[in-house]
Image (cartoon, rainbow, N blue to C red):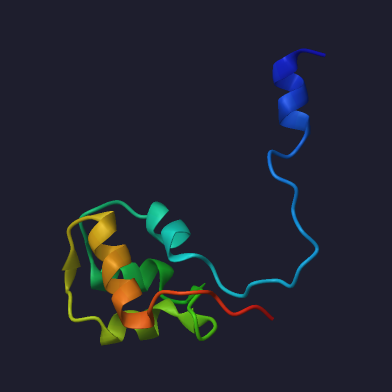
Length: 94
């Protein structure tokens, strides 16, 4: 077995036994989209996804309803706008 095959067989990071975290990271949602993107297209494609927030999971479409941006020109603009709405900090676990 070559070194490449061994590294693929074992996980890069051991997963812990701790509690699950509900929702998806906003960075994961943002990585599935291309930019620029209107808010309406994001809601149509990813609106039913629950994202992680410090207060627990929230539906992305609810968060975007409160954001005052209609078109996100970059991934960073999208992530920043969502984080401003939901806050930053430790994410609640189940």
